[in-house]
Image (cartoon, rainbow, N blue to C red; front, side, top):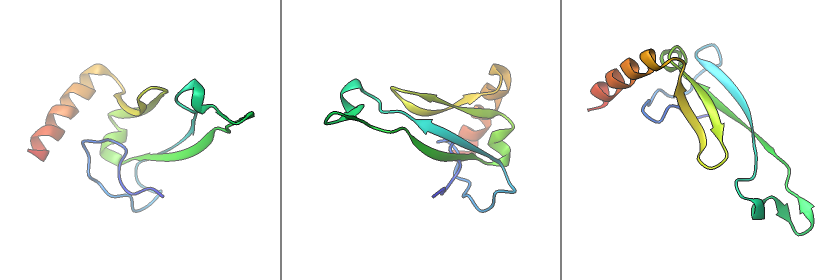
Length: 91
């Protein structure tokens, strides 16, 4: 179940699919020894992530097998400006 925006710096709660942007990601086992249960291969699992309206205009999501889901700027300039504003609003 979605609870809040996938951006760690954002606290906007998820309320409706009409707002923001929804992502569907296939999550892979992170390490080779976790890829199998006995002699059976683990299946990839699907997980939903959501960015609120404000964040989806500046960020997208990228999955990294070692880190997990990451929020990345759509372009460097917009991302830096928005991160600075988000940090100022939190502090």
